[in-house]
Length: 165
Image (cartoon, rainbow, N blue to C red):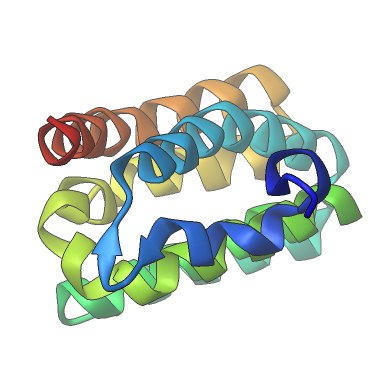
């Protein structure tokens, strides 16, 4: 039997995250690390490649986020925003990475609501990222994405450490 660590792909992440109804904190931490490392790079690439249509799509995604009425709806709207960022980056590999991470994330949305609240309520952070991408400012987009994600990444990392401990 082959070792999944050397032969599997990201499609295995959702099954590793929750096994027998239990969250695996080590896998959760890995997802958070990947999210924090990849998203600013994707945002910078989006700023480099996005045109006016992508900028309009990102602004509309921020509007949907602002109109969401509860935490679960805001989390789904935030995923929609990041989907627009990934699409603006125009990279099939980043798109497939996003799909895999989203499949791991979506089943846990209801449980993640309270921890992610500060992030999904940060409309100014989403606006700053959308405007940086729209302006084609790679450095500002990278920084805006990092600033937007870091608080929830840190909070979720602490939660995973507690679960693991």
